[in-house]
Image (cartoon, rainbow, N blue to C red; front, side, top):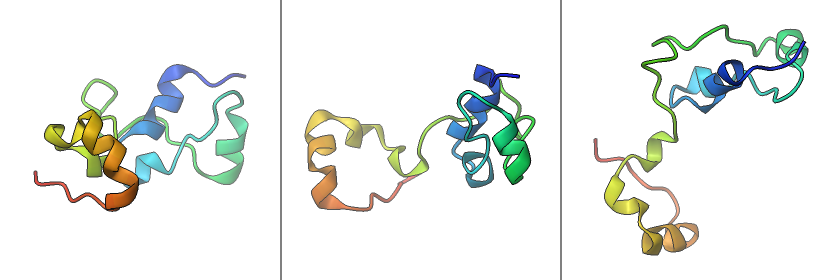
Length: 79
């Protein structure tokens, strides 16, 4: 009846197919009706990486970099 934290957690994965799924935050039937429901992440809940892949460089997650981000644009990941 309601979205569980594990269901919506898949939406925060760095894997694009998983990011574009499980949008619902309160009612799960929207994702099922629109075909965006994923039962679980491919790597499993314990091994899933959460975040945005373009923000993987920890040196660029400091306050000055984050304040400059709107003016810099796209960040390339060096990993």
